[in-house]
Length: 565
Image (cartoon, rainbow, N blue to C red; front, top):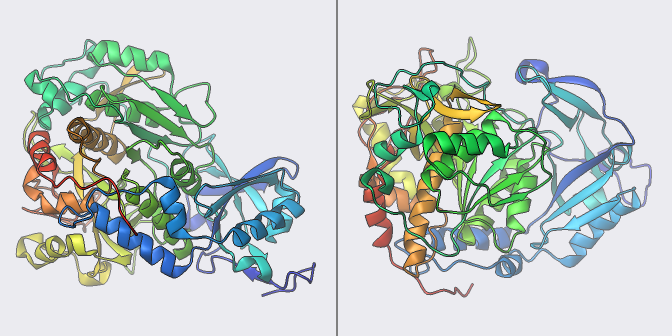
């Protein structure tokens, strides 16, 4: 604590104590000059949710998500989530007044009363938070810039107790690696797209055949009113309709964005167009929303979707960072609360597991080797999607992509829904696990499932006027998300509720996935986790089998439409 110049509000109380100061050795982001003092900055202020209220949310979250529970599928509405959280209006007003008194030009209150979006000049933000804000540019991605605090931040004591954290002042995003551009792919399957550049690359037809989608058998997908899906895109990653049309025309898919949320950008980006082209290739019959955020703010994205009364039912996000890298326990706690709110409302959230193997972006170190698990992929409250390659040159068996993220959380214990599967993996001699000192044996294991994403045969994507090959779990996540959106369509067409949080269903139906039992996510190093029969920390339960999943989800108990909490 340090003295607050105003006096009446008490001493400054530093927030997010566990986050180290930014250092270039542990970050891909390089510190530049001070952010312009007169320019506006948007802050997502997460308010404190009382522990007993959050516990109640977690209980409901798991009950409505568990196919074996009587409350399965009895999802809450937006107002019911607000009532369950029970954030006092006085808490909301006190924090809002504090920022308004310090120059905020706008304070938007979230419907759940647990977050505020505060817009104020940079200089006012620095004074209100007792910090300095600088411009940071990504080392490998020129033009990718964020404004972040270059020193710890604080709030006066009278306000600090009301606030969980201010995001993301200290968190730096992990950007997907630069796209892999290969004029030729390694696959021997027929090229179903008209573009010659797609030869040997993964195309929509390859995905349909590999994962047994209805289109591969000449069957029409289920049409259901109320079905929906979304992808999350961040700074500079928007889409160009001309690119989407060119891809759709060449690869015989209807690639359409039905709705955008957030300020539109003038040009497309490879990550966003990859997401859009392949989630719609898998599920062209389902309306797609693009949720765009120009701040690289996971909390702002979570606040956005949590505030929508008609939020899309399935969300794919290619965003994350190492748990240990500029990521506080308060940040992860707040994100997890947002994920639980989504699941309680019947929304499914899928995250890419990362593209740096078990070591993570920070690497394993030179002398004290230690894996760095990814967040949010290692969160127990979302579905993590890993990456695979075809084992051969044709469509068939798959192997773990050696760069796919996977491992065990250093922060969260293995949740009940996966305890048996994780224990079986660790007890299987075939796993030949890395030395125990390198990972947390009691942690939440991830990924949960996987899909094609490796370098052996990248995805054929149209961006910027031409086709190129793109690899990464950023491709795997939208494919799996599209498949679960299709499964929602089956249920909705029969009057059943959406699937919501997917993991309890996934872990109760391992036979609905195509097991991957080859490969290791070592990213070219000496250590990683092996794919073996059953669940593993390289590919989860493997890749989707749509036909088997369709049978599984239609046999799940359909609950009554309301829940008393």
